[in-house]
Image (cartoon, rainbow, N blue to C red; front, side, top):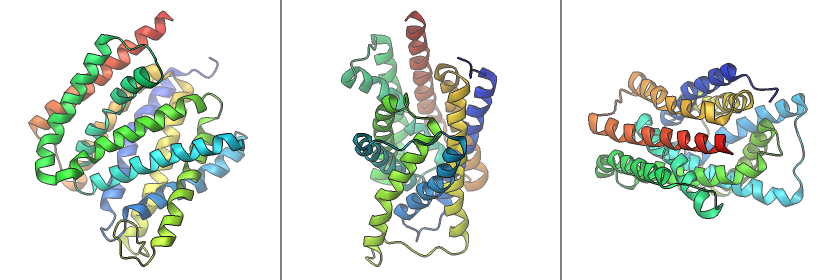
Length: 298
């Protein structure tokens, strides 16, 4: 392809992996009185305000046809719930831990592709997925003892994000990635904003909005801006390099999350957690390797 510039694509993916955890850090640092739904509104609302004019400026914007509007809403709903669970998780657990558990998502996509899309998945990849899930159990178990059900939220994020990715596969073939992200952000903002309006004054801690002051203004703005910038890095990475080349580099996100967690919040995974993380990463890389071999044979 004429747009292939593998080295540039690799640089964009490294930038994404190192910057994206900063969004989670902003969500974690947001004062507890700000409900998760309000953080979501900031995340997707700011992304909409930034990406919509960018899409128009680049000439990539296309209005979705009516039959795809519902699909956009379903995709946005899956991403919205996935993000909500993840933000709720990082408020109570180390960012690196949550991201590590989340990285079972590619394994879920592999198995779901075999079950629902009837894509060929050999026994080696199935075994690698099972090893990755075992690693997730190792990571989750001590956290579950300390945090309860919150420790499972990243698994819920992975499941919902896998649904989002599966729905995106067909749409991404016809819509520019920036436009697709803008439309997803707009749909997510349209879903969460009415909930905040209706729940205003309800005293329901998850949805009752609070007028942000002080540090909350900066953290909410940071969530939206960093989410936009990091996902632009991701989009351009996939534009300039094949997914098979850059996808393994996404695991650097665990490194970025570990560094931010340690220097900002004083969190650092213990030995057992690193064992589980290693199993998740190794199985994910093996699945990517096997998929690349299969694609090269086609």
